Length: 316
Image 1 (cartoon, rainbow, N blue to C red):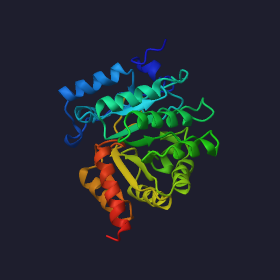
Image 2 (image 1 turned 90 degrees about the vertical axis):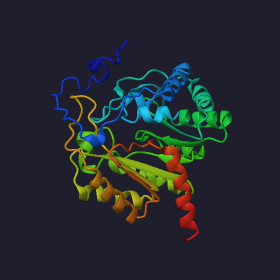
Image 3 (image 1 turned 45 degrees about the horizontal axis):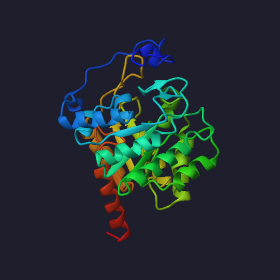
Image 4 (image 1 turned 45 degrees about the vertical axis):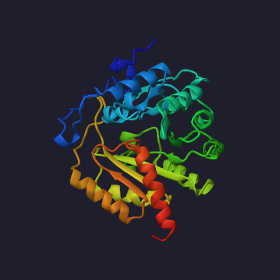
């Protein structure tokens, strides 16, 4: 059995790469170690339900704060991904068979945690004919059954190797927010996200709106990977053409020396400028800070997202 604590077994596709230096983090990136009672309670509930979270698997810097508030982003379909993105700390390899009881355990954890809003994400499952679409549908249904007042945000893979019915099934399950991250600018895809296709991901987001114009869509990118400002602004324009409602921008942090190097740390002032530019382009919601991640403060942001749409529809 693979030991996913062993870097060479966790990331076999990266094991023979030359090391990239990991620069020290500036003051605005540093966070406190997770030690609160709320953190421990969330950890225990997730462990009791045998659930995986992207918070742990992707080494999110906000895990202490989010789990301290009882919020966790649950990662379904296992902890091993079929892709090997250069930025990502999730293990790569051949995943195990789907756990048919996982959707029910997710629903029970959402009920026990008392979540008003939950984010469900997954590994990429290129080994499955539908990319895991039906598993997303079953998970959404399980949450609705056990915690009917909880709003549901999904952060999906790109369903690159599936027919159009996979996406259609997921949208038909009526999550409250459909999130799929572009991750970076198109010019960096060959190095950063080699198993994906920028325009396929963009088209996926556009298709969601075509299938259900009322559904909120969301996407995010990382900066500090080597992109320039003009490329980021172009991604914003591309997202608006696809009618994306909510944009997130955060600082890329290098998980290990084998991962893509941090080109630079983007300053808080630059993030503020990106936010101003994005709002000027018409996004309903923008979160652009060094520590922004797709699910960071997702519940509070969803409330703001709904309010922003209501104001726009009212002409305010």
